[in-house]
Length: 79
Image (cartoon, rainbow, N blue to C red; front, side, top):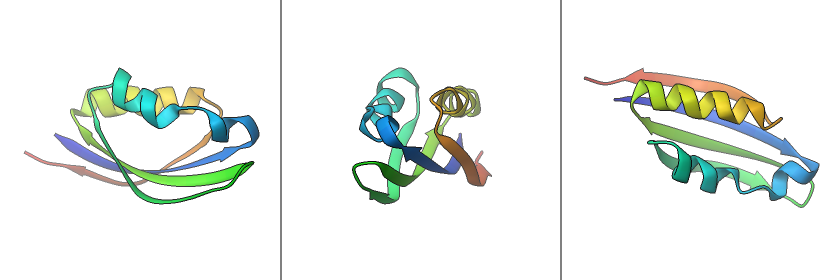
């Protein structure tokens, strides 16, 4: 299992999209929001993805296709 902290920045219409819901539904990862600041046209969210490395990689790759700015902050791999 692995844990990755990711910072996501969204602008305009991206703010209104249900991307956290899609992460939870479409990927085998546990999603935890650790920090956030979201307004009508701009927002950032720090999320922790916990799960199999392959699923975290798939989820992160999908996030990059959304047009949001994606930064991996911390990575941890457990036994």
